[in-house]
Length: 68
Image 1 (cartoon, rainbow, N blue to C red):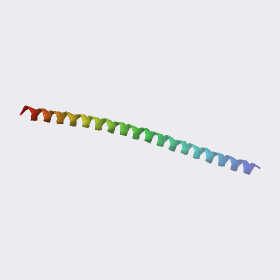
Image 2: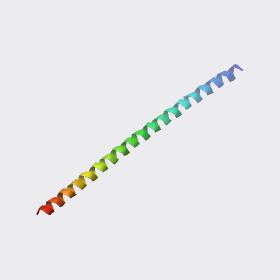
Image 3: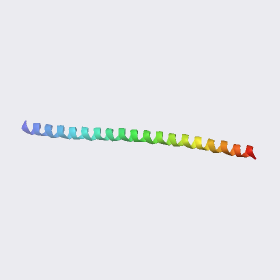
Image 4: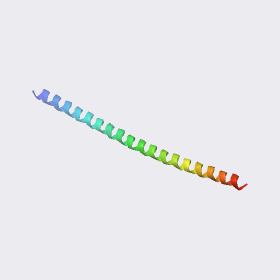
């Protein structure tokens, strides 16, 4: 009976370790998702800034054309 208890304790420890590893992996995936979303948001901001600058340059070119 003692041998079974020792085996059960060992199995329980192994399960707890696996559970900890799984939770750690879940936490890592969640952090990657957060980082990915931040990168997407930053890219969208840069795209909007580029579009605005491009539009500003086009307007300025048009103004120079009109001035000639």
